[in-house]
Length: 263
Image (cartoon, rainbow, N blue to C red; front, side, top):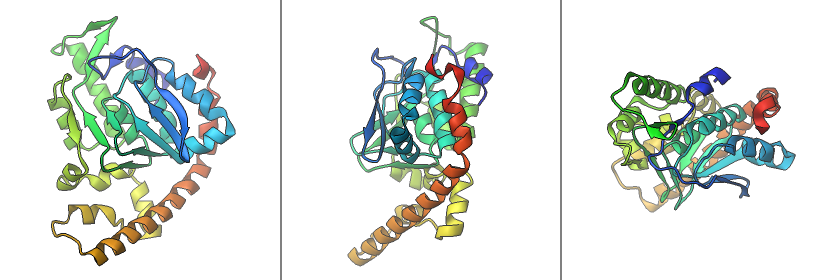
């Protein structure tokens, strides 16, 4: 996404209420954790964090998310960096990824939400100079269309976009793995467009979505075999992702060297 496109999102918020504290950006497991509300300046803080060689390796491997959302301009910038880095995104048990955070989750090349973790979306809430914008205005509609276009570009299914638009900004539609399976969306949101095809070419059919959508309970032996198959497939697919990261190294370095990254 171009700088001009970023500017179009200025002063747009996806949260109805904006906490004052910025997100924490810390090493976590073998990756990086972004926790808390996303605020102005967080993109520059992440760039400074990622510029350290050890941290870049972490960021490119896995980004764990636990956030109620926040500033959309910062979110889109961070999402663009995530897109180029080919990172995997995760929501762990007990963590939430709501509102603008959902864009970060969708920007991963592979995306996981663990049992006990939650995703959530709702209609955008727009403020200009601190004042709410009239949801019935043409300007609001134009901004909403641009937000939706960007999310669709990340591969957000139409069904989820419709749920987002139908959910009041003061409410939250929580997206569960079971709902995704029932809507036949689990594979679509779990992997970036194109990546799932490349991974299946090298690793065989993706085993998770079909099993979750099945109605019959597994026996203990079937569950053990399935768990092993999922683990092996994810390991193989992660190798495919890593090989793609090497090809994108120049573009990632260019993003980190952008003149305004520290402003």
